[in-house]
Amino acid sequence: MNTVTILKDAQSSNLSLYTFSHLVPSICDNEEGTQLMRDYCLQSNSPEARYHSLEFFLMNGYGAEFIKLLHENKYSSNLYDQIWAQLYELLSKIEKKEMLSDEVFIELEKVAPLSDEQTCVILFIKLYCFYDMNRLDVIDSLTNEIYSRIEVLEPSILKDSLLFRLNEVLQRYHWRRNELILSRKYGYKIIKQKNISLNRKCKTHQCLGLSYLYDSYDQAMFHLKQARNIAERYSLKDQEYYISQQNIPFVSAYHHRVEGITSKEPSEQAHIALAKGDYQEARIILSSFQTLTSFQMYYLGIATQNHHLFIKSYNKFVNENSHHFFARLPLRELKKME
Image 1 (cartoon, helix red, strand yellow):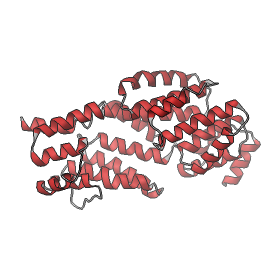
Image 2 (image 1 turned 90 degrees about the vertical axis):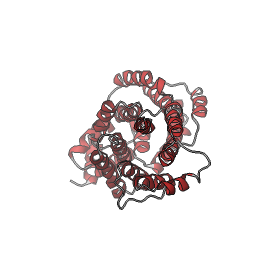
Image 3 (image 1 turned 180 degrees about the vertical axis):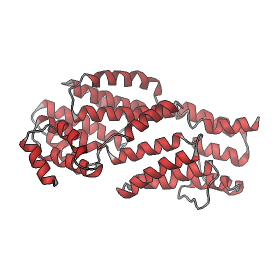
Image 4 (image 1 turned 135 degrees about the vertical axis):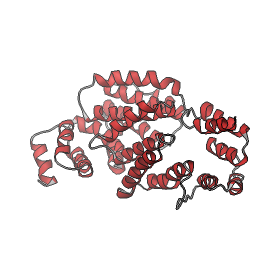
């Protein structure tokens, strides 16, 4: 059955976006299914499509479709439409890092939700802001509140997508807290889902790969290569660069398996030099930075065998980045020096 026939049959049966989304995986693969959902969102005139399609388009990277629908809601005479536009404009700007979290909170104060669904989206916007601010102390209570609110929503593609978003945040939250069993549980839950955003599936594999940094080179590389395959196949250029120039060189250098490994990123060039035992080259590269990140302090600590740099790196990871997983890097070096 071709896609035109599928769409016509769905429309003639007056299927909701939610029902159609659960029918699609039995008809076609992930890529074609996402395209089918996009087409059905565009063709549907229901109120559900008017609001929930904003979430679908944003999650799946359909930028032009998202902007068009956002403008339709933004310039509508209906206040309910306008609030949806306000919320998704903020959500989009957060994802593109076009607004600071403090600015987002100010804008949120101007929004009065008119439904439980809108309240859930507001809570997600707050969640992303707190996460970006490294306020991990509030994540646990906020995710619990979000989950309890999502549970009582009527079944919809919005509800499914918000649960997906929640799993995404929890995977990264537990990873940063070095709670790896929980982090991986959410990660595997995400990649087993059907009809999910390929960009976000790619990011999930990267997080899973990095979570195996200390445990297994093979497991780490398996997930990073899965992520790279997705990025290459679907032309996710930013992700492809990040994987090939940063994550794979990082894991390879940590495990001293750098034959054939290169990077355009100076930090990872220094890391690769360290893995090869060329400490002088690493020092030269790292001396070019005016200020050092947590990772660069850690690399320079290895290059100079200066335990003070490991302490500074550890404190920076914990106190500034709230990243207890990567804080193990300088801590392991300090233990070697005891």
